Image (cartoon, rainbow, N blue to C red; front, top):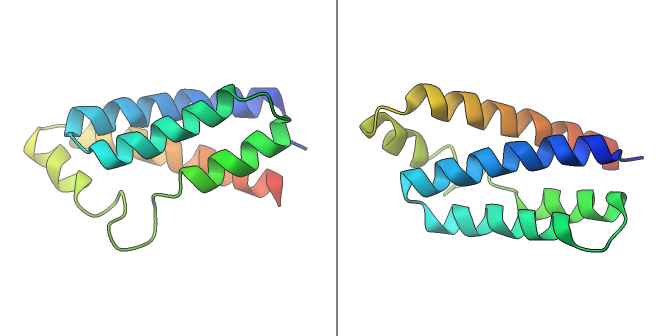
Length: 102
């Protein structure tokens, strides 16, 4: 069962990666992250929010993923450390949420 605290932690991480996506000028990723934030505001059970937000924020592990071009852009803007920290945190929080909904 998903706890409200877990969704709040995920939301904080999602806000950070959305802000990073904006700073790196990746509007498509920003839209995906925004969709996740919108889902978290919906009048749904925490379990349903978790399922939907995990699906909406699937940005790792395929061609055109978050790990393709954004790291290069972060390097160009001297934001490598910020990119690594925020991406790692988001990945872990999303993975934790996924494990709870299975």
